[in-house]
Amino acid sequence: MALCRHTRSLSLFLLLSAAAALAVTPSAPRGALRPAVSRPRLRHFGQRSEVLVLSADPPAQRGAVRSGAAVRSAATGALLPIWLAVFVQMVGVGINLSTLPLFVLSLGGTPLQLASVVSAFSGAQMLGGPLLVRVSGRVGRLAVLRCCLAGNALAALLTSVAPGYRCVALCRVLAGLFAASVPVAQVAVTDVVPAGAATSQALSRVGSAASAGIIAGPAIGGVLGLAARHLLGVPPHREARAVFAASACLAALVLLATMRVRLAPPPGAAGGPG
Image (cartoon, rainbow, N blue to C red):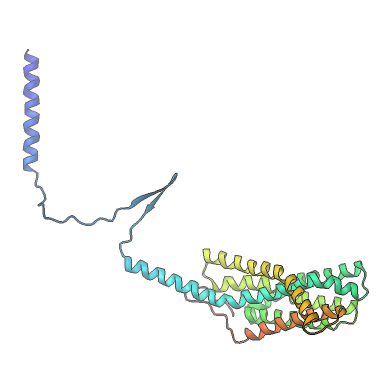
């Protein structure tokens, strides 16, 4: 009984002490404003959870977004001539893939001679590519891309008037020496585009332009051959020559279109020779 009385007394004492402590503690007025605290919010996406951090300075964030969009837009405008040059040169390669075998065989060439013509282009490209990339660091990326277009146009034009197999082989060597648009364009991208995810995207577009040229080249060659036969009255045995001449004209037109373009890095990008 005594233990029970002591337990009740202790419990009553603790309750009175807690009530007194609550009465003494100051409370904030009802109308007072609490300080705004930026708390991260948790957004759920299936099995993932992503924390959204609220910016303390929205105007600064919007300015940074606008600045990044301006840089990307300027980089895209600067890269358009590069993508166009790559596309047109690879169109020429695609035209050669579909038209050159028939042309060499029509000149009396053997399958072995045809294989040597194709290998001559690849061997010359292996030698000329690294050299032109090195030269582009001194004279400018677009200048070398223009040289590639000029060499492509000259090789296609000479192929269209080649009298025999040996001349065609020499023309393919010339075309291979100037077939460096893809590596030069890749280096130019790293000069123009700021380092980061945008660089990978721009490099992938260079590859896409090259692939698109290879895909479109044979189709364009076929359309040019049909147009030369039905619109210009070119005889069938000269259709291949007309196709090569048209390919040379296409490269020359793009060369003229890019003569006044200057490659300059946009704000925020690493500068490089243009």
